[in-house]
Length: 248
Image (cartoon, rainbow, N blue to C red; front, side, top):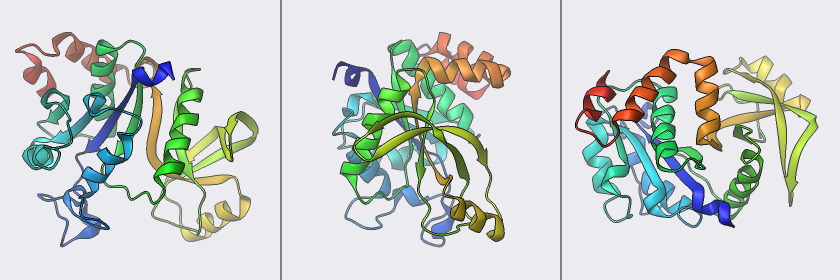
């Protein structure tokens, strides 16, 4: 598949991971822990994507306080040093994704980005790869794809995605890509139960896939101040002034 030559992964590794406290804490977040194997969660994440995406097209966004540990853990994974994007101050997801998207767009105008947290546990790698392949097909039409998980219980700790069952975009094997009606924040228990009963809601996995130019176009519409900053940063990538631009 030719499009695979334009496929990149952005791994978000800046969280503090307090859910695993006291093993995980602000200075040693859960993505740096071994949970279900002899690899840490971030090592598993890189291993999971490399059947589709070579390590030289994997970018890791992390904070300054975690950068040394993250680089150490991925030392043998083949991720180039230049692919570590280090935020001097932790902000939120949008700037991290935007920075990576701008860097990829400057490198490859046809770039497609798989965005993943660094601390997820995914049991079935094969099913995940098939979902990514379907998402790539959808994203080529400039859709912004979010990966939803069919809920197994009324969970109040996750955000939800309401799908439009009658707006089927594409399907492949037993997987379907549906248009999204809305995103909702973590609900209370009665609301979560209603969502699960309806069959129209999915857990928001925090995994996304889109063309770099498509997400930047949406950023320009929705977050123009951020977009302006990303454009300035893009002009300074790989220059002596890049660090100053990142801080700004």
